[in-house]
Amino acid sequence: MASIGNFAATFALQGAARGGAAFLNSILGGSPPRQILWQTTDTSGTPAIDSFGRPTSTVLYPQVVIEEKHEDVLRITQHPVEQGAAITDHAFKMPATVELRAGWSNSPSNPGLLGAISSLVPNFGNGNALRDIYTTLQGLQVNRSVVSLVTGKRNYTNMLLERLGLTTDEKSENALMITAVFQEVIFAQTTIITVPDATVMKNPSANAATTDLGALNTTPGNNANIPALNAVLPDDLHGLGG
Image (cartoon, rainbow, N blue to C red; front, side, top):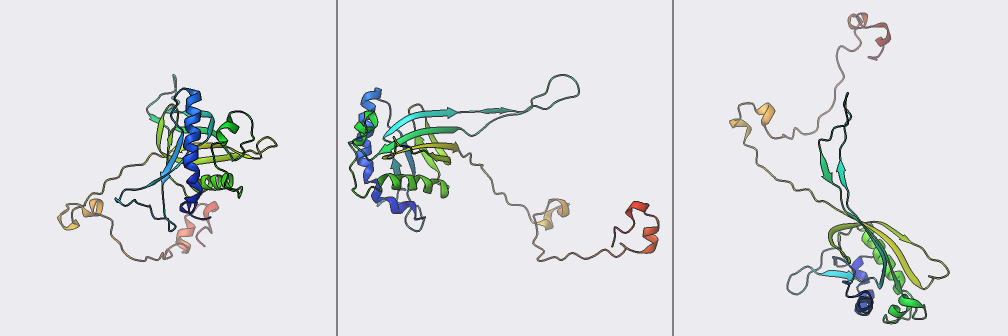
């Protein structure tokens, strides 16, 4: 699959999509435009920067958002005890998830709101605009691209596209209607420490840093099959040594 950077030309669609988002906002009373943002990369996969050395982002605007499902879960551990109720000793936050049902259209003839918004989007003539958007979303998933989401109720960062579904029927042949599930990625923080030299340690065998001993080979035991040892083993263990 080509790099996401190859789809930059496709996102000439963005300007018209912004107009579509503005049109939708006028209907929904000023709701913020929904956005999917991610770090732009060049054809080699290296993060792209602008002329000022700042990282650049690619923005994808859904023309219409049908539904958003936000879910936050607090995991509360339960351990049964001999008597009484199960005890709880930990509670931790699970990664947030967002399910997004959104769509794009290239057909101004579609009736209703979707058709009205799609009339603001130019027709590229090759009929591949929807395919390119879908391929771009697939690229976000395949490349494990970390994205940010702007929704009507909440903004998210550090999200991965976990599931991407597409349904096409006789009413949506000229539209791209996707269901995308994004899950938050919680990055762990690590600290690098310097361990003192083993020569200044009282018990270096227990406290010294790991030492590379090179390649090691296993060797067979010397007493596994001697008659004297087998003589004292239980009957069901005889012969296990060889």
